[in-house]
Image (cartoon, rainbow, N blue to C red):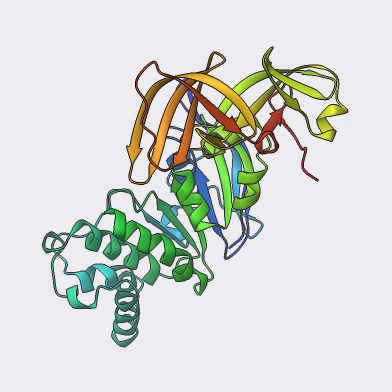
Length: 354
């Protein structure tokens, strides 16, 4: 199912939930909506499903305008973060419910239910009621119901957010494979950049109701078109600073400078911005050395998250190993200048890589 939003917007009273959006989703692809809470992910999904009618613009499926077609007449399935199952139905009947509504023969229903129950490791639970299941099992039941329906468009609104870590990891790996054989177009909402990278496919970065960028997930991560897109696709937040470019040199301050890439060297001198991802700022190593005042250091397993004020900028270092610091401690950090993302006065990326 090819889905296209043409100049679609959504306003509720004086508030704009979705600004004019143009985006095309190709059939059979895994598409991710990446953004923080209130960025517009759920609103965009509801527009795609037909649960909300756009204030302007239209939704086209395979070239046909379906804006005014009721959701019940569309081939759509949606799974929410808060799993929804029929409490009086056992797992089997929950999964089978859309097939029964569609009037499929009993034998075909049984075959499909058991196939997707096996896929989602629910076979031993088919006779149980939802309140007899764990949270993960309930969410897998909801996913199975979406899969068994055979919908051409499947919308997954942060479906793994309430699951335990191990199950989330398993399903992240399995989800793209589950849908690969169905031919469905899948839209998956998440607030986690790492999850988007793990799922792959295509990603739309959203910020305050705007689609900032859309394309292959790996491309957007490596080459964000704007500072806004880089900010959406970084957790911890991307480190940002203003620099002064003079000739072939970038100055973070009078005492911190480095040679700029050839493409930037050709551009006019003046003010620019850099973005540096936290895992490219290290408390040890070599490269450009910067001094800072540590604000907080958090140890998470074998990694350290260190918040530090560097040249007046609030930066974060995400480093391997355990690095203990005291509040207010002076410390040196290092980064490879080739890892910097450079942005012009309009905060658009300057492509410096060949």
